[in-house]
Amino acid sequence: MRKKAVLFVDGGVDDVFALWYAVRDPRVEVVGIVGGYGNMPRDITVRNVKWLLRQLGREDIPVFAGCERGMTGENPKFYPEIHGSQGLGLLELPLVVEQAAELPELMKILTPEVVVVELGRMTSLAVLKLLYGERWRGMQVFAMGGAFGVGNVSEVAEANMFGDPVAARLVLTSNANVTLFPLNVTQKAVLTPEMVAQTPLVPVFEPYFKYYQGRDPKRSGAPLHDLLPVFALHREEAVRFIRREVDVVTENGRCRGQTIADFRPGAKESGTRIAWEFQESVFVQDVMQILKK
Image 1 (cartoon, one colour):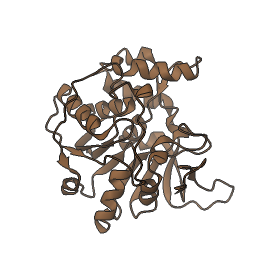
Image 2 (cartoon, rainbow, N blue to C red):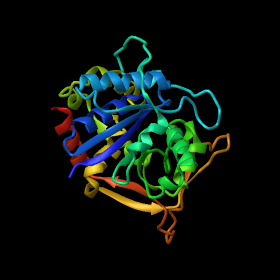
Image 3 (spheres, rainbow, N blue to C red):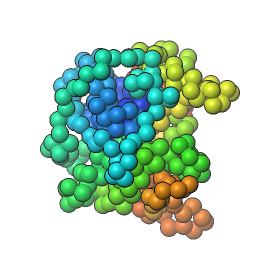
């Protein structure tokens, strides 16, 4: 039986790979895509989603406009130095505003069997939680975000949590059924240039890899964080999960966006399900099988 999913994306290179993988995977039925701010502005994310769906021949998938900024009220910071000037690596498209459905329309297709795959800032999810609290009860959410023992945007914080920690706390402490894929695990979801050369996504990947290689010349590949939650939709047996109560630091300062959980011996195993390890060889084999099609 195909797994139904709605993707929430924020305009990064790993979002492109995750969208391409999900839409082409016969085991997954993508019933909608929400484009929001994050790595890129909201309107560029929506335009990228529409363009990618045209390349895939899947313009039938509805696209929704997510939030333009976080619940903190700040102007968001974007990351063209990592993802390219428009979130598509070397590719640059005409700067047009694409039409998309309003976010509340998404609730018409968010039935209990649909998994929400959150790959960016959690603002749009938090808005839906506030508007439709009771309907949110038990909603399945697979979210890339958080970090335990590492960070990227700071020493202790991952970018999705840091970008809107208020929204992240709302989602993680809601009555949804959240599975978290933190940075300390997704950073192992690596593809190499040789692997990507077998796919149509080489120009998207090239500057992304160069950025990571510039930070660590010994790298043979780059982590495509957002691929892991999509992989887990149909390959949960290849992922080991644990459960912990997770909180997010919302105050500004050195620890903003840090995800906190108790990993001491004897800690209570309840709350958010957290991906802790995965079979890397199985991941690569599965992803490449779909991306090469």
